[in-house]
Length: 231
Image (tube, rainbow, N blue to C red):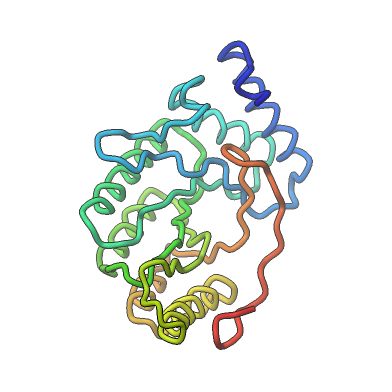
């Protein structure tokens, strides 16, 4: 509540800058990467940026401000823009990939110090995937000089059959492969992932520390999955 009670855009700017300087400065040189901006793009057609307090107060330039502040506070850390709806094969996701790529080009042209794109891995076992589209997207992102991280790796099972054994088998098979890749960087035997994750621009990303849209929290890497996908 205190944040929304700030009286002006300038106070909001000071709050954003001060928070990043405090947190990133405290852990300067000790954190491999920071998720500087999370889910900034609108998940609806016709809109570019997701509605948020920072967008309302500072406009879309808040993203550039956050990255430049983070770079000054920790010049050697990898700075990540993390977003979602980039994996499945559907017209909506095609639009999101184009939107994100177009904005990344604009950020790079403006000198915004983004070092990597995080592609959230909230995957539904029932989703359709086109490995060629994902690889093409990763290729275009890499052509901008950015690394690509596969983040927030999980499997959503809401649309799976009610039968527990069937559901567990589908989730465990995909989750094991995702966790195996994220933690160990090895290839998976699932065709979709095998054809996507072997792209040279992909990097495993399992430890995310963000501070634009959520409270900062340093996290430890999760332990490897057991064969049945459970820890």
